[in-house]
Amino acid sequence: MGLGGCIILIAVGAILTFATDWDMQGVNLDLVGVIFMIVGLIGVATFGSIARRRRVVVPPTAPVIEEERHHYRDGYNDGYGM
Image 1: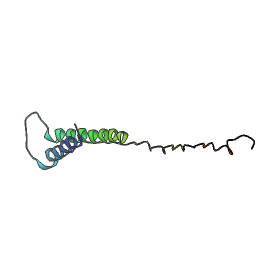
Image 2: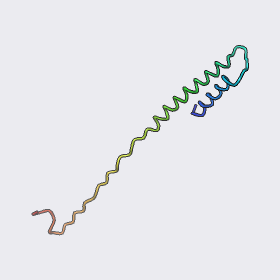
Image 3: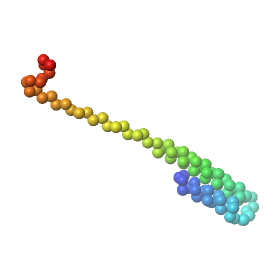
Image 4: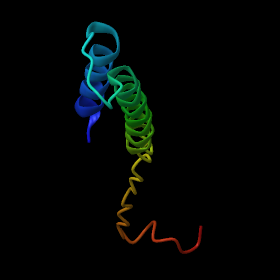
């Protein structure tokens, strides 16, 4: 169940609790609405914690650029005698 489903549960629960006056034998619609709202809030909290863990991004490391040194041997500066 995603975030949209949780929000729908909260909305349906609020409608059953606060906006209806139906009487059904054996069913307390106010209690059913409160249960829907609680389940929806738990779902939103769970979805939020999972989404926050997914968004953790490790910053990229700076690329290491190695310079190539070209050694030219010209006979005078070849590293000997300096």
